Image (cartoon, rainbow, N blue to C red; front, side):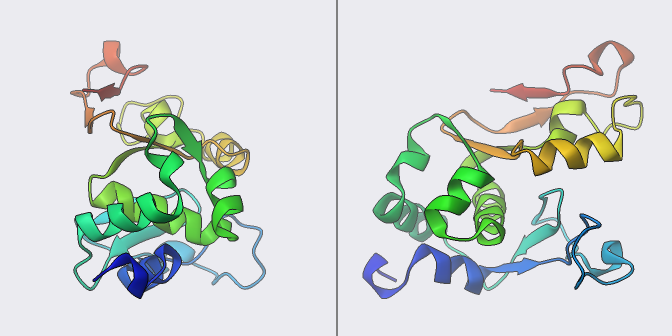
Length: 166
């Protein structure tokens, strides 16, 4: 594939399976959106919905498309889905792009669940309403070139620092 053959938008649509919206405000969402989420090890929780990689996306092709269309996303600064949605013309496709980049280990994904350690069984800060409010305010971001995220062991003293960027 060459970058002239497709756009990032089309590439993401071809290589991402998106789950049903679970924000609670979409009139077209199913009654049980959690049952309509993709499953598997190559899945990213984007708060509003989950995404998974399909059709064997290639990391280098993905990076080439990002570099060709939105090179500033690779500048090492934080970029949120509102900004990226403005760039792409669609916040949903921006979230799918963020998820695919995370799955391909192109950038680090930061969501309210990650910030609060909501994936930890001991997290006291994993309030679903607050997590959704923060997501709706733009607190779903990516950072390129900062390494991968690693969750620390579930120890009470680490409950406020479950994300370590290495």
